[in-house]
Length: 273
Length: 322
Image (tube, rainbow over all chains, first blue to last red; front, side, top):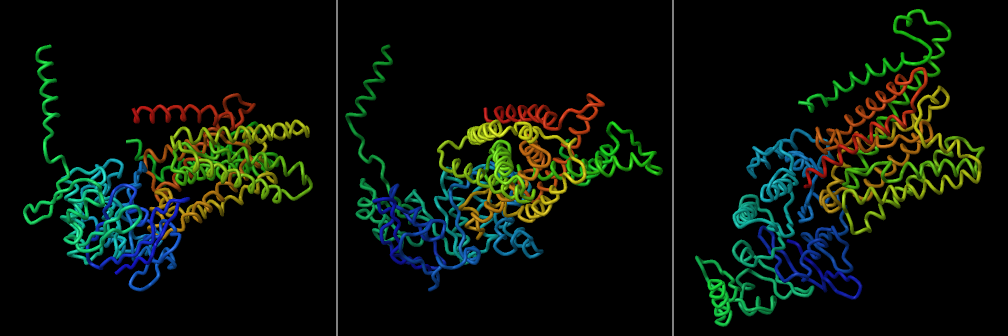
């Protein structure tokens, strides 16, 4: 269990994250949703000590982790950020081996190699093992990074927009992997995600943020509600139950007659010309 | 096919062969056959000149190449090196200032001063490139070159004022013919720094993946960066003081190794060191032979060969980006 206690971050006059207190349950997938600029990624960076907070504390099972030494923390929490856009020629296996750095400081033991092998086969990356990461597709690369956090063997895994630049197929694949990690290895997964339907279908809990504050935090059924989402995103959102999943429909629901007429007129003009 | 040749054992054998050749190339004829009964003169030549020269070539070539490799990894830019970041110019200015202000001080004190100044200059460069918005691969080293030229102009101005243009130009052009016993031993100081660099190979690689990536793994990012810059500053100052500037070396050698063996320093740092030594040795032997019995200075040789390879590199990169 992770407890955030009144975390704040201020840039100049703007409170990017304002007095956020929220609890994250162990062994669950928790998604942070909200519009651009809500402070989700900033919050995630502070919780994982990538960014210093201006005030507040983070308690990991009652222990204040922001004062814990960074190398000890690396065995408890792992964070994957989207900025990992690398053009370095590092092989898949070498990258996954970095996950063992907190344990062996780069001098890999027999046990480290076994854990790396296991992470590679868990993510089904055997055939790419010796390829350079810059030769892989976005989805493959994301799997390599997740394999690295598996090798890092932390209970808590944070991911900042893991579906960025992925198509539907690979997005679903990544979310299934995350669910599998929770189910089979009792990991705790915390993600920042933009697609509310992915959040709705694959999370246990959702934290909704707006303007640096938490609007609501609870189980996904508590958060995926018309009035709540419309308030957060300031747009019309309808929620339909499809195959037992709550799906948000936020595209133009009613066709605008005048737009249709205009398109038809243009088509006529072109035919005549 | 070629990449199979970039193996440590093959390259070390090549380096040993070249080193032996280097011992026997020069104005005073010493052939391997003479080894059993050397004349007094030949013995002197070997001990006082040929051996120091060969050792200096190995140390300077290996350590400058490793400097370039570390800098490229830490700045995440393949075009950064002691030359293109201005580190060499700062070292040169440092040694000039040391000569002006405390000419009687021990050589080590002057070296320390030059190292400190090149470290400060490199840190300044790092600060600038962190602040500029353009992170273009070619733009970053251009900033370094401009900064280096400004520093170099200051050095030239000061030397004009103090009538020391000649000694300044001797650091400008690398030259191994001035290496005789008693004049090069400080170069040995770079060996422990080189070893520290080898020990930190893993950490440098992780730091090259970015600050967030490093912090996630519990790596003290700032400390690793500072250690890397300290190593490069000290080694660069040492080489500039004893041999002079060896342009392009720290740029091309790490890039060649990177093409064939990737970017994990654990796999490449030793290869880079050995290839650097081979490259300098080859250039120096050629420089001694082309206009025999005279010599072309190593700075010029490396400049010509190096800039040619550098151009190929740029065209390759432009092509792969297009």
